[in-house]
Length: 460
Image (cartoon, rainbow, N blue to C red; front, side, top):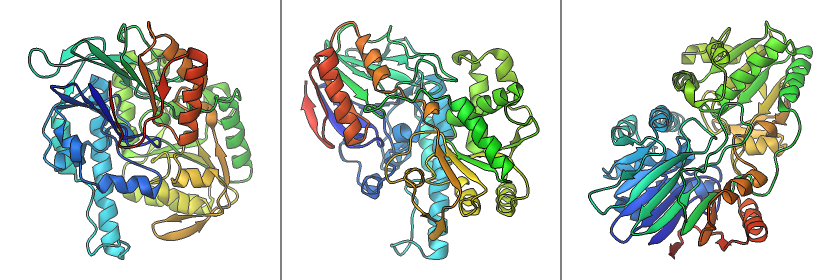
């Protein structure tokens, strides 16, 4: 058995791990590269060995784990894509939205002449996304699925919190077992139950574990109270709060949090709350449909959207940006994308960032090289649609709302494996985070562990 680390091996995005069992090739995740330009340019490289995959398995729907599937299909790949039922539904929403943004970005570049090429082309189209979605095969967590005919590899999914439908993957073939964590959630997540380990392999030959927060612990600060205070002081100075949020998972957690704050009376019940992301609106309905997978009481699920103002059209979004620029009223706007890399949130940023009355609250991880990371770093201006926009608004990052396990939680999750893996590979983290988690695993667990390089292949 051989594992090739073709993404998320020197950064957080682009999760792609190709496992060659000797008779089959199974691709664990097919993610989009985001963040630094060096990484984003990998999205345009030929698929190479990815085209040889007999099947793809998605750990969950986030684009850094699923978002390159339409590009793979555009290159002619036609195999099955296995994932949990909820992941299949969420990924369909995400991929279609991503394709729409790819097409819009290409049209905008051609209209304003901002492309370095004679004609800007999208990385993939909505037709490519539709073809990829048609290849999805739902796999119930805990159930063994054979890939191919008799004697082929088997797959088993184990829920790990983090996101609706997110699962670790156990891939078994010829007596060998590879466990892939995907993204591990938190014990006390607002929406998702704690990660499970009961269905993982008895003995793993290899463990591939994420390390997004491998070098830190989540702060003990009360994110709920912190958000309430930000909203109150921003409204007091006549401003509004903009929250760039991941449309799937984070947006729903924020809606739940805001509803709780209003019921508690810690923020005004009359505060206007806008959800300006068609994808987040669709994802919210999927979360409600799969409510049994959440840890949220039924009564709270039923009231999640009470009083919510859902912005459905581009014209409505444009009018909202104009109102925010005019500082006419206090409001809370939740919009995508979560790292401010695209989507409607960019228009709101252009309107709000120059005004010190407003607040920009980033409630999640910001990959290096993204606008979100630049805002958190305190840069005085950011580039949006080819223009430099001054940043005078208050900028706050809410660490306590992360959906990723921190270093201690990752160690605790790994410790629950019945036997130590023969080899552990640390992926999906910035270099410092990945190496810090490697040291912790070696020191605290005594396991053989290493951080693979991008493009490296390792024989088991």
